[in-house]
Image (cartoon, rainbow, N blue to C red):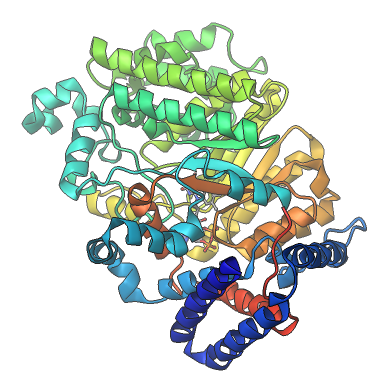
Length: 631
Ligand SMILES: Cc1cc2nc3c(=O)[nH]c(=O)nc-3n(C[C@H](O)[C@H](O)[C@H](O)COP(=O)(O)OP(=O)(O)OC[C@H]3O[C@@H](n4cnc5c(N)ncnc54)[C@H](O)[C@@H]3O)c2cc1C
């Protein structure tokens, strides 16, 4: 009885909150409140066990008719507005909490000032009450718990409804902007740059550095303008080891909680970003040199994989440019295509030895064709740091294989991304021989997204490993654009949202076709966009791909778009939620970003709120207000 009263108290709090927040639903809220007490009256004489039996019966009924809307003929057909199915894993309190949270996110002032408001609330309420409040609202909605133990109920409940977890430890240092900028500048500059920062641009070796791939204090705080992703700042090697330990624990927990689980990692957590910056620059310049040579052979404007250079002409061209030794000797050692033609993939293979990357910090000079050092050599300490980063990646990938977990490498800023992608491909070569263990992330808001996807797919075909990709639109758009505009290089992002959508669907179609032809590839459609999800289903129907082939996965964040995740899982798709966890105080930056991303103006969020109301009303009118999900 005490329990029921407590329950009613909680319902009343949420309903009263919804009442104040949702003026247009005033009548419904009143109705809800009266209905709660009527239902309580109905149940209060029923013995506890009988009550449980009633719930069991309801749940069983539901599991039977819930399947009705998923057609199991050859075609996949899912009704994303069937709210009973979508929210089957949620009790009514959770529905109310979602409504309250999404409504709060629709107030610009609350979202813009969320940090100040949270700090003030902590002072006014005291730590305990504040934590309680957060758990009843934002934290409860978007975060699974404080540690591996406490997240289990959420992970297991989702699992029971076919939705897996990508564990994502979300604790973030609450650095001030100045601290973040200082850390970034320190960790992105080499020892030689630090020695003479004033002369930096005139330094012999630095003359070859590009603005995009050097640290800029104004953009040192990489958290600025990012709503979807967390940011790591380099402190020291011990901190990177600590991050690796955390990722190892995540992998272990993923392995323990489900079959075929995923764990997400970010490379900036695992080493000094200076290495990622410099290696990215080398890769980009290397690729650009190829395009320059392709243009010389009249292959300008052709799709990247179609740019095939005649080796003889290439050598003549390089000789004319005055290239000596290095580049030409690379071609004569027989590592390139036997056809006498060289394409971008052959070219890229020239940079292929993981352990000798520092030797490769040389770039071709477009005027002379000669290889020149990008920087004076790494110091011994920098060299060690770079190798430790590669070792950490190895440790994580091996641990993932041992625990039957897949490793999802998140995508980050474009000045790190070429190196991140390249290192991920190196891991795939080793660990994706039999199945896709390592997944790379491709950001489709990038103008070069299709080239990146198609080149990696082609490489996997040639080398015989399994391609694994997560496709996202991209989380760093505002930051990327303002950095490019301010510093003066080409904006890497598609000109508008529509072109990003087209790019996403083009990349997705390409990977789906690869899956159709060669069942080795895997893709995760990581998006909250219902049109993209429907596009995937339509293309799969056209190609005759089935959800149960387990080649096409879907990914959403915990607390968002359950109306997409759960029906997909019911239809047999592998669906995963990114599951963040960590103590309340330490995930505040994460919560702050969730508030930004769920602003009421977003089309998807509005739809989610409508569906939540629809389900709430359905439960109230059908007497299912005390519905308890079966686990
Ligand atoms: C499971 C999961 C994992 C993720 N992992 C990563 C990751 O590793 N790296 C990463 O960067 N992001 C990641 N994201 C975030 C993702 O990139 C998007 O920011 C977020 O999901 C919103 O995109 P959407 O497709 O869900 O929805 P939508 O609302 O349809 O798309 C919003 C996105 O469209 C793009 N866009 C909007 N306006 C424009 C414009 N004018 N011009 C060009 N593009 C525009 C932006 O990328 C914006 O974020 C992940 C998201 C999920 C769900």
